[in-house]
Image (cartoon, rainbow over all chains, first blue to last red; front, side, top):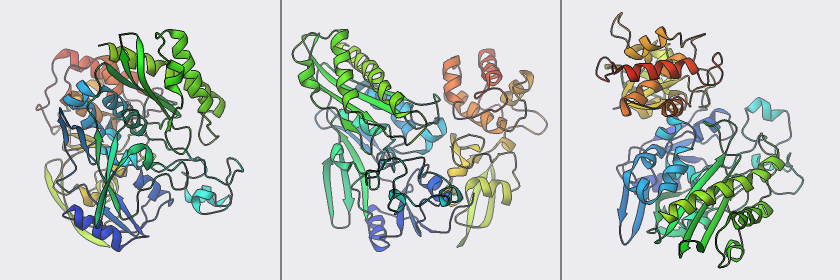
Length: 330
Length: 164
């Protein structure tokens, strides 16, 4: 499949990149790893006239850790770099873990953390070739008025990135840059919950950095992913857990994030209430898993029935919780 | 829009005049005649187009050729030294880890990336290392290929500088 025609530029600075993005607003796309964008362009799901390539920029490629300020990851850091970085493996094993289950070694070497966070939502009525899509009326995500999944008037295409839930569990923040301004927002607020426009990134904006605080004492985090094969595939469901222990067996604070079920990663409500100040036992972990199950509401947007994927949320949360607990106890 | 692109493939410098929308895979196969790298799904889901870019396994079907300037690209054609097969190719040959052979060039490149980074991988690490490949003959992931790589690694004969 040939790519559609476009013009390609390699700006020499971030400012120049922002300038080009704002100049061609409406018909431009940023390209970094390109693993998602080029596939979508081959399918003519996206046909930008201009591609602004930021890979050649010297910035945004570092992983820095400071005992006071925490972790700063440049948006162009690849998944493979996250998996192999010593500081990440020691202090934020959940991030290395989430990166290691993305795609396959090739996609890990090519794809970037920024790209994974900005991943477009996916649906089997959307990510298809032009002739396949032509057989049906255009769906909401393609600019039409119908949804082939459910009649709700809202696009249900799920966000199928892996990094976001792990990072949201760690309460990460992101830095967004555009011409004339920069802002830092919690990653959780980046996602809109609408499959059609899954995040708030402006077309002239660049996600430049991911910031994570120093992990709390006695805390641990983990990510679990469900997919058809143990490689290449996007998640059918995922769960990240981050918890802080008190007295070795009582959980002071926990955050459970589930993903690939709806248009944005979901933070499970009331986890702290469920945990109370009770001693952590298997029955309590199952209660947490049940709380996540209640909030999961997958639609039929991918292989694997929604019922199965929802049921598996329990398993993923349980596994993830137990691994996070082990790490917190270390 | 066409542009002159300078590529270093298998240690040789090439200049091609191509449309900027050409992928690395298309340029390798159609401009440079290096048809050892295979095109299968063309969507980044099968691994048959894998080449090494500065030692890292890349899917050439999802890589723009224009973005590869100044990088060192290694394809399956650059593995053997004349008539002498690369140790990984030799291992695949002796273990019959090739059936139809369509996925093999990509898998050999991934095996090289794996062994260069980790010369003594466990079976699990080998399976993960070539997990980005789909092999229709040997059942999803090539079990004979896993054995071939394991045997080569265990023999201690693998040296990343031996060729290529």
